[in-house]
Image (cartoon, rainbow, N blue to C red):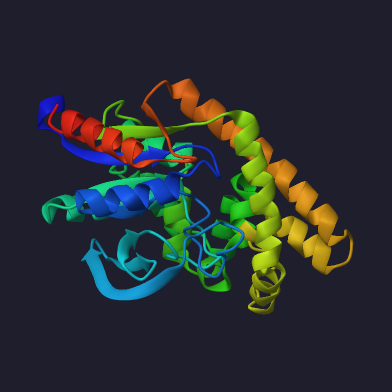
Length: 318
């Protein structure tokens, strides 16, 4: 029943809508900790192009179910989780995210800390809202069959259905039989229970689309001013040129700029256009769900924070 569920906050919405700053302010007021809800911010070394807040390391970590999950600090003070957890060449699935997110959420609740999900990846939020089942029993016959195959054959099987993900695996994963079997078994095994063990209170930004798009345009230019080209060059030198994140929005244009296929002005223009398209898809996703309280985050005021706290106080005990 809903009354028996523990409550968590989610600050979600399109890129550049003010979610992060708003959530940081809320975390300070509510004794909260940030949990990343952005599929690109899980990657190490990719900061400017994914719009991460400045992160520093902390000594705190959670160890459970074979995972060691390290805490980060935003602005050297705010605790934050699930940032910088894999390298760009590592596979990271929806199942991986949900497993780690539930560990972190449970740990926050155990410590009487308010978990605050922040980001724009709708699929991650959907998985938590609908209680996607991560405990499906393994198919013993399938596992026996997979175990009888060579590592090379297992990699070919995985590549047939997930070409980009397979190509982005690092050499260690490609030769790791247990890892490959796990990836193949996960395929199609994430099921929805249509219910979550959490009461997720969703806050969503109010905005005028034209103003949001102007902010996206400014942010796209700022990425290059902050050193996006240097960030991409370093990632390539580390061997991540063909990794999935570097083939996506922002980084693909920067690589073309480095190769002198396009000018920096063109790279900025294309990046801004792609980010506007991405924001439009995010808006369609989140507003189509019809969930959440709308608050002014783009130019938020103390009143917006007060309203958010009032919503949380009302909803958390429902």
